[in-house]
Image (tube, rainbow, N blue to C red; front, top):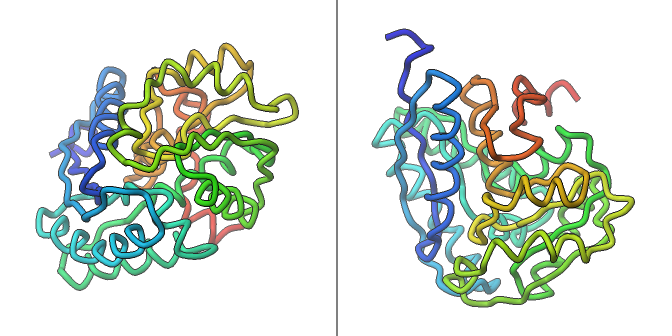
Length: 266
């Protein structure tokens, strides 16, 4: 089969209470199907987590190895780890450790596939668009939001301002109205920011508000889900472009090197 018409299997490692990543990433990639020939199917394995607390996040992350093996049983072409704060709460730079370990699990299972974490994808997406200063919105309680801020700071991204919505229940995070996000973003101190992170969480829906927020703020707006989709496409060596998903997926960064290549050439 021609690579131009190939169907790619997208695997996602998902918290058990996450109901957004399996809607937003498919929506982005299906929008891409309107402008490019590749097709995608979507496959998930779940880790138990209901409340966004450090204890549940740590226990959930320990289950990610099982999920990587299960998805590699399906011979997926790329794996996405769909919980940003679980990675960031495990320590500075942990997305690299997680991506390498889970990739090894796929290798050991005879079905090697690249692994993208939403945490690493957000970092890489911001670096890709040259954003050194950002403002962000997160649904987490303030201590976990501060963990995200510290993680990004360690990766060379200065968070000028942030809003912690302090929603502890993960299903309540998914129920947050994305229509409220542009106004929340406008209220941030974003004048000197290079970009705004509309949702630093793959459970809080934001895709439908990305382009509205860009028009309102007059600068690039990303989300953890948009960055994850961009990085998945680049890990598959496909042009990272999709309509309706904002500046990062506009085509301006369609051929940006994936994180692993960027790390070795930096």
